Image 1 (tube, helix red, strand yellow):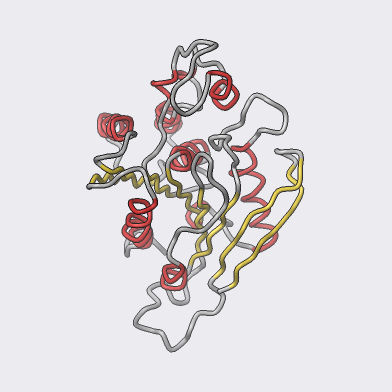
Image 2 (cartoon, rainbow, N blue to C red):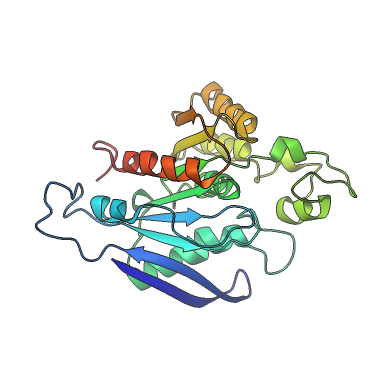
Length: 265
């Protein structure tokens, strides 16, 4: 199991950036009953952290070997994995374009959308949804846990105000004009509508949220939106809060579903 720490200069963020990577390059040929994807192409999961978080792996490493996939963990700082207003804050471009291209050219992985997945929790859960829906030609599946789908709650927030997490200025930097946020491409609902209108392939979406999580209602609302649009997806609720206990539980449950027979090659 190779564990790498890599630094390169990001044109999107205009500075040197670091990311970590796990590559299961030591598959045991005698482990036949356990290697469920033996001799199949290696997939990649881009793993996104939450607000106040940092790059790090929280997928059990045995799953990497079991299903033959690499994990890429970038740092999106507190940028909501979006292209912010300020110069050097293009986190969406960095993740979905620049970093994917770097992994392709350096490791010859994530060469096609069918080999490339994105997963995150909280801010990273929103980032996973937004990234997959904004770049369906690059990401085919997304796991979004306790997603911070804040769009409707932020709409029409006024200068000088805020909420318990951050102030107006922060949200405007990340999401742009809060008066028009609901009709912008930072709204996952708008991206779903675009994919339907264009006839593009819809990424396969897996969502989960704890019943004691303060973000439960926006997750339920997006689930209902997808249902109303007749978008096939997977939605789970169970007892749990906004914490690593819940996210690690669902990492173990949902990551294997990405590789179920009939969904994977």
